Amino acid sequence: MMYSSFLLIIGLVLLYLGGEILIRGSVFIAIKARISKLVVGMTVVSFATSSPELFVSLEAIFSGSSDIVFGNIIGSNIANIALVLGLTAILFNINISSKTLKTDYPFLLFSTILVGFILSYYNVISRLTGVVFLLILSAFLYYMVTKSRKDDNVLANESDKENDNSIFKSISFLFFGILMLKFGADFLVSGAIDIANYFNVNERVIAVSVVAIGTSIPELVTSIIAALKKEVDLAVGNIVGSNIFNLLAVLGTTALFKDIRITDANILSIDYWFMFLLTIIFGALIYFLPKGILNRAKGALLFLIYIVYIYIIFK
Image (tube, rainbow, N blue to C red; front, side):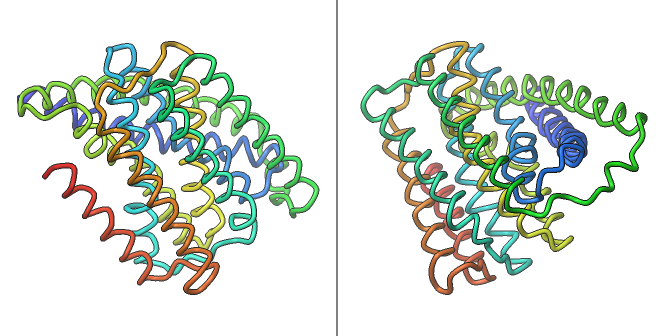
């Protein structure tokens, strides 16, 4: 038991450090490509902060634990909105950009419904479905980047001042970040499975709680730091983009290696529907009461919803 707990803690630490290092390298490369801050949040940073979910899901599917794959992704999406955005909004009022309202959130809702539709009818994410998910995501990202370059003010020309050493440093960050994420995922999944078996708790519960919170740490840190720096586009774009990446990129990439089947019916009947309803509630909060802002009251409501969810799954 002590050894399993140690693996779990080491895994969480490595995922956190790996995610932080990967974010730094990714953002610098995005700056070199002259992409706007909102798109950086929606694409590069979202992919980087979703990389722990990807590595954990790949490790889980190779270990034959498909429930951890679904639990990790769905639980992370729930944690991102209710826990991460909730806590961030409690600390800082978050203004929602018009682009998030017009484009990003509708696409997140579409992705959520799409995944639920496929799981309801087929009970599996197949390799073909994984390819379709990745193609849809690629088309969306292409639209985001091209539209940003036409309509937005790109990031400052500070990247021109960077030298080859900075580029090499960023590439090194990417390499070591990925390496730490890989080993962090190995340790986290192994420790989570052992602890679930020891306490006779099913893998789904561990995945949607402990594992999901662990893999959402990069989003929490990134959002709070972005809010502190008054980069609200980056904070919100990171969360919305991360949830889209979890549904389409993480599920899609994992399914390329092996079909992902639901073995615990509660994943669909409880966890997915909670994620779907939470996404609807999140939409209502940013479109109304008042529109375009997440204030402290809304943040407290989101955080309370997360506490209720954790209580339900452990009850």
